[in-house]
Image (cartoon, rainbow, N blue to C red; front, side):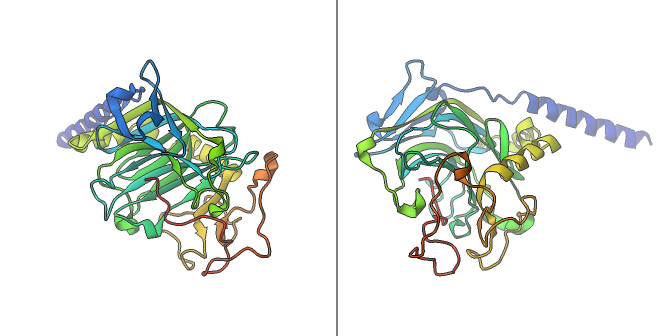
Length: 340
């Protein structure tokens, strides 16, 4: 009995120690120079005088981007982003994790891709998760936003642990990807760096490439601030992974999950979990029925419409080409989309 009590006491002390460590995990913003370095774009990357924010610009010459100085093996990564307004069709602003530079043939990636639109039409937000180069099994989802992302900065964050990836917008979870055994290597598991970019996605970003970047409206500028890099360095070990897994941002409470489902009910445009055309009726093992069944066969929501907030929504025309698998209009750009 004494031995059992002692073991229980040791376990409790360990849990308390882990919880204390998790509570001390620093999620405060870092200056740009402390955590990041320029990636490309030369003078299209403009740092603020205080060094705590960065403007990324896209013009006829080039886009721009930056990358973390360190690769991380799990953590919490966030940036507040103010998107360009006016006509932004074809413009892609991305905040994502990737290791394509180290593993070009089998890289992992966790994406936020913010997709521009025509004047008077809403920005879209796309998330994606894949591991070991599983781009042919992309886990895309796409959403509208409950605010105008061009008026002020909003926080976009990723919590990545050994068991789950959670996407946040302004502190509210919008998507949870739980690792299950059947996912195999499709769950991102290798150390990744953190990237931010703006680039020309004319080939697919707005209505499948129907509307391309119009450089008469350039330069397009996205402002990044409140840069958070609360991650485990590659040599961080198991203790750091436990700190991340027990941190507040990694724990999905009932209240947080209810908030996530409210967001998804009001703003989810497309989910691969309800796409019966793209993958011949198969469903990814991590998908559940939390979003209900009110979706078209190609994964688009029957409920959510941009027109409800005063924006027009293009409907399929009779002359619109349908993809080879049948069902989805070819202007809906779902595929192996990448942020690099």
